Image 1 (cartoon, rainbow, N blue to C red):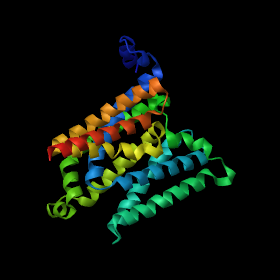
Image 2: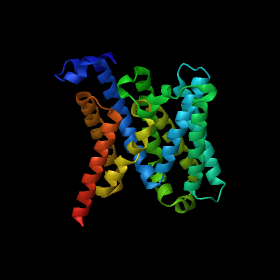
Image 3: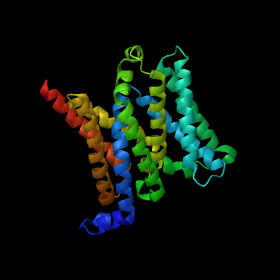
Image 4: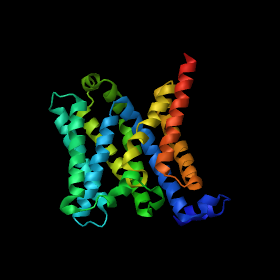
Length: 279
């Protein structure tokens, strides 16, 4: 971290002379590729509602961790979210209900359990507001380290499973006929989303977290001509919006997460117009 601080101190960027801004930028450089990569499979596999449900489960895990007196309830949230995703995958594989129905059941249950845990014994819900809105300026070096390790793990996972995940998302039956373990691929991907969502919730906020997992790929899909462009543009849009959103939040004093989400929405609108113009 000292090298990172020294590098930006030597450059004439006012906002990056503050250590908390350097931390926020480094966290974004770890989170943006995660959002960009996972977004492509979330959009392709029509799992946007599922990522939102995982955000609710992460909040529930944080509330339970706080009740248990844990110094860092985030890790309790990670465990709870992973367990939530595993249970969802198990129920989905053994039910004839539509996926959106099962997601709705899990999502509503997670929300109810989270509110119940947060208000148990007459407790105040206001202390959890930080997880609803998020504050990337308060990110710690420890949290950045966890994000960096997660990014490394997801990149390795992507290198091994990207093509299989794509085929599984587009046509599960064909993927299964070609010997691809569809259930395992879907479960690993669900766990990856669970970890990323949980580690990001305190930085960008539950209320807009899902938009960051949908908009990058939705915008990329408007203009990408092949799968490589699709993945690359999604990561590029997430990175550009992250840096621009952090800059706007510094100079205008607004939420960084909200600024990033609005910029991604603008990119989606722009690419949509470009798509329409090509036709």
